[in-house]
Image (cartoon, rainbow, N blue to C red; front, side, top):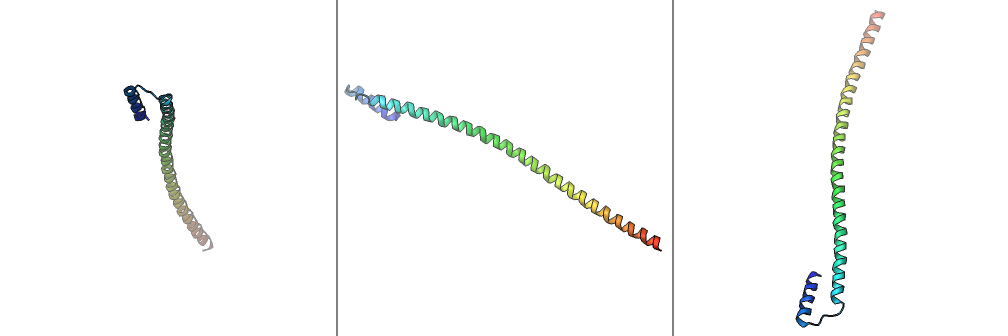
Amino acid sequence: LSRELIEILAISRNQKLPQPGEENQILELLIQRDGEFQELMKLAVDQGKIHHEMQLLEKVVEKRDNDIQQLQKQLKEAEHILATAVYQAKEKLKSIEKARKG
């Protein structure tokens, strides 16, 4: 569109016969396209902000996942310790019962 406008202006200056309304149509199209471009730029900026927020949230989620994995590991260790303690307690009870019977 810009090239067309420049060509029309150059031709009209050389010929001294401007076509009525053609220059205005191209200018209006340029203004319309500029508006569309500005809207797209605004949308791109908004999407950039959203993308940045998503990256921050992904980091938070990753940290929480790591925290959860660490807690699961600790719970498993505690479960193992408790299972061992329960087993040893049962064995002691058995030996106490045998001692009473004996």
